[in-house]
Amino acid sequence: MLVNGFTPWLKPVYSAVDDLVRPLYWVASVPLRVQEWSANKATPRSEIEADNQRLLKESLVYHGQLQRMSDLAAENLRLRRLLNATELLQDNVLVTEVIGVSANPLRHTLTIDRGSRDGVFIGQPLLDAEGLMGQIIEVHERHSTALLITDSAHSLPVQVLRNGVRSIAEGTSDYNLLSLKFVSSTADIREGDKLVSSGLGGLYPVGYPVGTVTSIVSEAGENFLKIDVDPSAELDRSRHLLLLFTSRDSDSDTAK
Amino acid sequence: MESSNHGIAVSVTILLAVILSLMPLSGDWIVWKPNFLLLVMLAWVLRWPDEFGVFFSAAVGLLADIILRTAIGHSILIFALCGSIVILVGRWTKYLSPLQRMLMVAMILGLTGLLEAGVYMLYGRPSGIEQLPMKMVLSMLAWPIIERLVIRFAPRRG
Image (tube, rainbow over all chains, first blue to last red; front, top):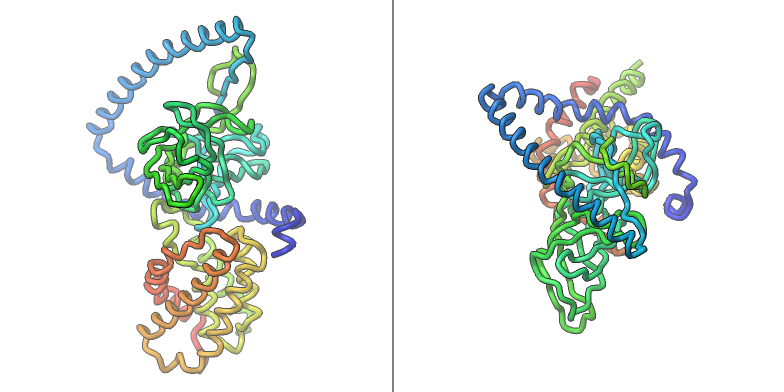
């Protein structure tokens, strides 16, 4: 335990075992795949057509919003250049699928089907459709392991979207709970406030949704508030995720 | 001949336990999932206490450490402790009804769960003790299936 806790000597062992265990992850996810497949097969054609129509409409709305966003982004870039400010980072994404989850309920990790041959790197942020999921901690040739933001060993710099109050969101080993650290009892923070990544620390890019403040408790004699946050991402459900590739190249704004 | 048969049977049951452990679940089921490797190990030790002792328990614990990505030694200690308890009480278990055996397994899991949670708390880490009762109940419900599987794979001689 000491060797494992204080030295990286056992990492090659874990890495080798990961490669061996990977086919078992696939086998273990067969029931889930069968369930998805049967759910798809059991869906009536009329429902699929209705879904298709709804998705087409949603796609049209999002495309319209994207055009507006592109215009605003270009204007923002021009204004930042006028102010000699640093350029905003551009994010490319790569779609990935979850092929395994940690069997240890107190360790929140995922195995995804992208590895070094897809350009995945250690520290790379991972998102789902709703918000930040975590970061890559191990990369293999064809798969990688990501540490989720709810793992008790994970901390993430965040800010309140409403007023920019900064804090650190720590994992609690509960998939539905983050804890905010070092928020003074006089800070302007309320229940329902949205939190986004602050970009401090340089690991996560700025502005991605992290969660919503659900409860604030001020305990007598404590310098800081006890704040609970409900994560935005569906950490225990999402199967299709996005790997974020951040670059300073402002022309490349398309998804891979 | 007998022991090689057991080798295959043990490997198959442990492989099944590993697959069940790795099976992705969502919601509360993630933290309520029984420790299938521990249950399979207990079933083998209960069935053949002369062949599968503390070393076998520790070996399955090592496998659990590697699969579950816990610190090497963590599951080894827990599995060896569970194996030792089962060996100690093993001589009386043949007089127990299936329901009593289920309760005994739940008690052993509860005891080791409390010990594990205590160690986590000592290090200031989340212990997951709130989930322990539900985990015990689900492990208890899974036990007869695992026990039956082990009996089917390795019927007792005589």
